[in-house]
Image (cartoon, rainbow, N blue to C red; front, side, top):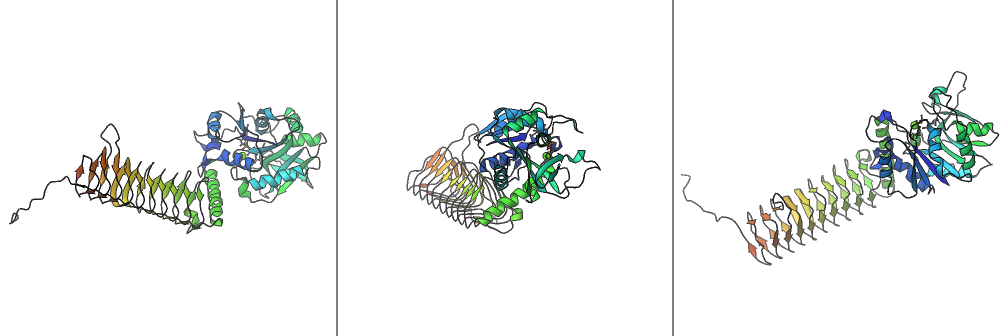
Amino acid sequence: MKAIILAAGEGKRMQSDLQKVMHPILGKPMVRYVADVAKDAGFNDITVVVGKGGDEIEKGLADCEGISFAVQKVPLGTGDAVKAGAGRIASDDDVLVLCGDMPLLTGEFIKNFVEFAKSGGGAEAVVAAVYKPEPGDFGRVYDDNGEFIEIVEARDITAAHSHTDWANTGIYMFKGESLLRGLGSLKNTNSQQEYYLTDVPKILREEGKRVRVFHSREDLSVFTGINTQIQLAEAARFMRERINAAHMTAGVRMFDPSTVFIDSAVKISRGVVIYPGVILEGNCEIAENAVIGANSHLKDTFVGAGAGVRQSVCVSAKIGAGSEVGPFAYLRPGAVIGEECRVGNFVEVKNSTLGNGTKMAHLAYIGDADVGSGVNYSCGAITANYDGTKKHRTKIGDNAFIGSNVNLIAPVEIGENCLVAAGSTITDDVPPCALGIARERQCVKLNYVK
Ligand code: UD1
Ligand code: CA
């Protein structure tokens, strides 16, 4: 079984520099959804037909196995596009045709359709029609008890055509030989002067071959085709609802799923609680019973079991089990927080590791540092990690106590069990168990104010 995905249309109505089918929906380009659905339904040899700027699409699908690309130089219609993509089709192949701008298609629909097509009756082609009494700009499918008659494009409908409740989804199965022959006979005598793929089943029927119609009553949202930014946002809403529903079915609790945005690749375990306004982007992974508080925005971040993140922004960070982050913390790339840590309000962590049980409760910055376990890093402490040209590392040993308003001028090393006095600016290493103090002695002038 082979599949062809059509993605060479110009997508002018998107008004965008990005290729239409590369527009992301919850972190994944729409054409990737279509390819994944085809693979999910068992298709491992997929040709994506691309047009001008198609290398963008090739790049976007580079890590997707079993995909090859064909170029349709000028978009002369869906039939011409399939012709451009038919290079790998042999006469004994079964060929599925899909559109790259229908990201809401489900693997289940494709499986049912393919099963129907295979149950055969000697059909050379099967057209998937959906119940849609108001077909809008979908092509109309005419059949006689499931035996295909013709598809008429919305714009080619005349008063002479009767009403039909069945619309063309743009999804077809063909026998390779018939498809190749039908494509060879296509003409562009229609209102758009395009080569319509919809004419191929008609050509086959006129040859006396059997062509069947698969009647589906699937929810119409599944066939949402995207031509405009408005339709893109609409499709994103459907996809969001679908993703959120899948997580909730698997035991994730959401107070208000209508405000939660979870990218398609995100993994969430059972027992996780998600407050309103949460955005989980990229490859986030949230382990069991973690709590993601209101308005948190996480990207490519791992949250360990039972950890809590409140009103915080985390990018490419790792939060160990049982740790508490926020409110209002900013974990930047390379922040690796151990277990049972506390990273509190207005704390920024960048490219640093924190050992288990370490606490930075408020108003602190730690960058390019290796911090041991059981460390207390007090309010206002910072690492001065950048000298204007280079970044330098700071090391803090286990159980050290860094007082308030300490400046650690990197590179510098604070040993285990050290105490660094509040207000110190530390430029030299402090050996284990020592007190590091670097501040002016206080002077009290009696009766000075009087
Ligand atoms: C097509 C069908 C219509 C069906 C509808 C379902 C035809 C003639 N009409 O209409 O019956 O109801 O899909 O959505 O097939 N493409 C190319 N090269 C081209 C033209 C299109 O690759 O030269 C690709 C587009 O990128 C798109 C797909 O084919 O992914 C469908 O093309 P589009 O122009 O959107 O067809 P519709 O007018 O929607
Ligand atoms: Ca379309």
